[in-house]
Image 1 (cartoon, each protein chain N blue to C red):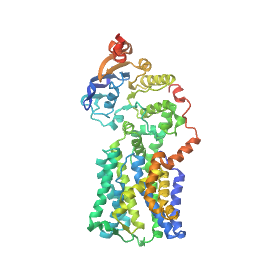
Image 2 (cartoon, rainbow over the protein chains, first blue to last red; image 1 turned 180 degrees about the vertical axis):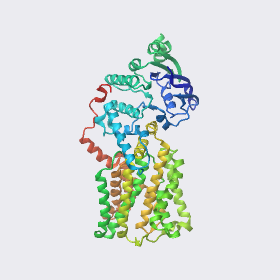
Image 3 (tube, rainbow over the protein chains, first blue to last red; image 1 turned 60 degrees about the horizontal axis):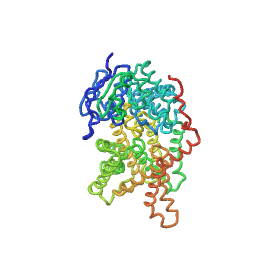
Image 4 (cartoon, chains in turn brown, red; image 1 turned 45 degrees about the horizontal axis):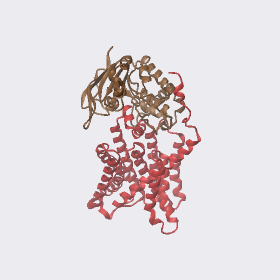
Length: 255
Length: 333
């Protein structure tokens, strides 16, 4: 039992607004750790701080014993951290296959088009083969050459995840993977996450509003409100926590 | 944006080179002049599209790099006696170096700020050309001698045509390789989402700088080819009107696709000829028509004629949009 990701006293300010305030969290290796809280609580900002898209004003983030904050955003995938995006930010004018190829980018050597070409094209052929295998697993193979922007919403979510998995992360940050999905699709995501964590030993941090999914897959839940941690524990603990009920339902819950 | 270059693209390039050898024997000089102009614009427009359509950067310093290409090729030959065949690569390299110097601050900017800053640079470059009389002959313009390539004096459009076709074919070949390489994918990824690109390990800033430099080099090469079939340049040849013309070609044809840009170059490049053939007086409306076409194209065809054609073709095949997600239904891998 050891923490693979630890966030210590993290604060993020946007001008006068304190989005994240002295937030700490430990994520066990191989666990599914959910981060929940009302809209605007600072969950996505915590993700963006780990992803190095926003600069924290204070605190530290350590992944696998290495400090994350000195890294650039594009160094994270090599360090073993991958993520998906809340609004399925895809490469919408590229094909489904190309989205996964971009996800595999760091495994393809060489930048310039006129390098030692035989070696490069071998790497390229291998990358296409790997990408097709990932598409097979995600059930997206039939849409290989469709533009990502033309897929329906559920498949876009799936492609976002497939793209993230192509980077072979050890820690996967999932920003609302079930938002907007139908029930049947949510149970697929549910089973997929369990498989990734149990069988492939991935550590998953999950921001999610769909409580049905959170309660079913999470080993541990951290609740944030107004940028601060208000509760943490197993799904059963959190479900019965008075502060959590208040944060979600407002003071009406006490009335 | 991945895999090998299709055979028909190679065939197209061979046809281009073959036409370069055959057409000068059959066409009158004026048509060859038109052909040379279109081929020069094709190189210029492809370079601009590398920034606009491939890496999503609205940068307009392009016309300045084109100017550097023209003036440097001409002056290297006139002042230092450096032959065309060395002068053009040097001019393109100079455009690339200036491009790098501009790119480092410019890639920190986005959208309208980037557009304004780079356009301001283009205006500065034009001002330098106009005021540095001793070197550029100022607003009067610079007249230069026909290039001499190992004794082959390029003094007519007929003699320039095969060389233009060959250079354009080489540029297209490089462009095909580039856009199908890992770098081409990285550029397109940055255009679609910088966040996703960075998450996948792509160094966004470095890739933008590379795109900027390659784009400047292409503009420099286009400038070099200008000296092949023209003998005179003024600062006005490399001003806002030219920039708008090239921009119209890219936007109307379809940014982000080689075929689209080539279609745009031909249609917009031949517009003055169409207006000339039309009832008298229409030619003076040329600039107005460019503006009108640009407005209509940006409003109704965000991806140009090429995008419209692709949409029509996509309409014929099922895109897998309506039925429920099969992938989400299948069992867990």
